Image (cartoon, rainbow over all chains, first blue to last red; front, side, top):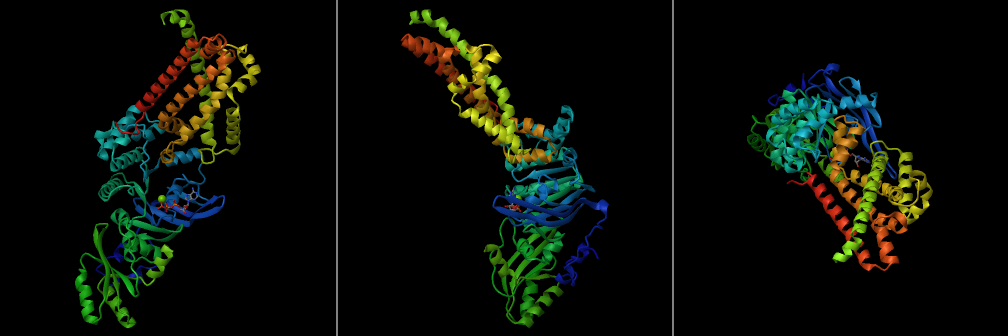
Length: 375
Length: 223
Ligand SMILES: Nc1ncnc2c1ncn2[C@@H]1O[C@H](COP(=O)(O)OP(=O)(O)OP(=O)(O)O)[C@@H](O)[C@H]1O
Ligand SMILES: [Mg+2]
């Protein structure tokens, strides 16, 4: 059974029981399909009086064509991880295999060549301030010694693609943040990469511009067949464009899988916390006992389900929070419910919800979780 | 007034020329030495492109030592070297040697600080595109730091002008020499004042031109 079918919301057996512990991916992980194999990666930062284990034994496979989200709290090690992917940061342990080739065993010159195949965009855009937009896009071509005329033609074409042909002669300081990121994307595409690494590429942008940039990335993924790795702390970014996700917590991979699967059935505390946060907002403080999180899809209208459940069991439930969002084109609803004190009734209620196609997660650990993160 | 110019005009004009020659020649040569030193300091620093403790230490200490020697003492101290290079220890060309010697480390520091101002993210972006160190230094750092480098050069010029006037007092030639010879030994206060006015005017012009150029070449702020 593949992941996507398993997540089909109409099926009654869809639920945490089946979703757990399955590491078989939708695509068979034959070597040709793996674009980036992150192999037991570790990174330790040693300062005079401190030692930070930013990455600890991270192993992940990113498939060709993926839009792969890497999400985690601040300080989880996301930036370190993405910077290790092109060896801007030398890992302390492990290796990164890109298109079957080990970055660790490359000479500096080979590594530079490899980097032209894996472009990167950043939160702060990092455009050259003293060059025009056109010359910024030409820069990677200049590095690769592409003749000036050809480089300009290609740069103009890419600027057209990101919708900024009319800004070619402007300087970055004359552009808005969203426009600067578009230039950065055009620049990243100039070397015809197979991979695009994005480190918090939309974190400095407002929600609308974020949406536009994400749409652009999605388009690039499709038209240029570029595998995209997106680092973010916002679940909304992941749910909007990623097909697969890894959750990083304290330098470790807490969870990985298809976005829908992780969203429906977060198995770890870090995942639950991230999944419940929306946008840039941290999850609001929900405390109390007997909390569950129920996820339902568009066709199961939830109000009757909850109402019917209350009528049937004759016991009140407390709706602590309800939210809907779009995950890869599917509208998903999410609720946090507080169930009654009677354990028997609670179990029956959970079974009732699962029977009706909702994914149910226990949030009993939520309180400890809050304490741990806030403490 | 007319009499004054008739009597001293040629003298002042000639020595202004000499001063300008000393200043520009030394600044130029000092930059030829100071830029590589400044780049070396940035590249070999602990979080530079190619950290190298030994090279960094050598550059750092050399720069600090020379910078802490007062110019007049340095001038006297290196007279044997000046003699070897120029053939004599007095005159404008001979003054260029100590001027370069004292300005180069100072320029190295200014180049260093200009290059360090370049946003690390931009350097990282260039690295992520596969740029080698040469491209990063010359096409990214030097270009992004252009305005700051020009401002630095303006400061360097004014400083060297000041040193050259000092050198003039001990036989270096130029306006400093005129000031000492006429103003101090012969009590010709008007000549002294004229040299001061000329020196101040030169600093002002250099400063204004440098700032203007730097600003014109800066695209960080819109407009
Ligand atoms: N150069 C460095 N020297 C020392 N410690 C570092 C260095 N870079 C990162 N760290 C540490 O490694 C850990 C992970 O940092 P990283 O920047 O990867 O986190 P992040 O997940 O990207 O966080 P954020 O969401 O805030 O950007 C942090 O504890 C950080 O302090
Ligand atoms: Mg980060």
